Length: 160
Image 1: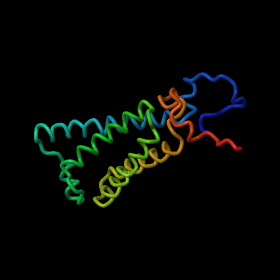
Image 2 (image 1 turned 30 degrees about the vertical axis):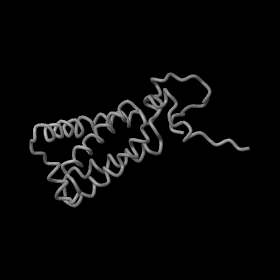
Image 3 (image 1 turned 90 degrees about the vertical axis):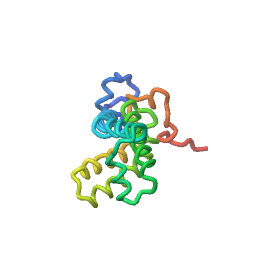
Image 4 (image 1 turned 135 degrees about the vertical axis):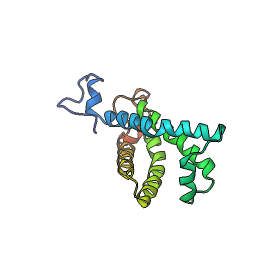
């Protein structure tokens, strides 16, 4: 698939050289950007909203969009986004978290497109990355690969 380049697939390859031959660089970079640009601030704001009763713009946005129980949904979405970012950075259950992230980013894309916000471009990119990670998995440098998680998805079936 995407992990193999070269003429001899049976040859031992250096696993660190596999970092640039695989989807892992996309996964790690996107996870780091998602965490630093969106998730960390959202989780901190959710904490202040829940325990210190401070105002939070996400709750108002969710209420304006007609999302039920915005005071509970907004912190849950912030926690999910942080979990997705952390999962992508370390490569743990990448396909599951990409699948979990798809409805969230599609909803965000609809809301951002309606309001004409500039962040819609970033939402499109996160959508494409989530779809790519859903299809190809975490790559060669990941916890999934270390523990062989999800290999049954990409392994050809045996014929009887």
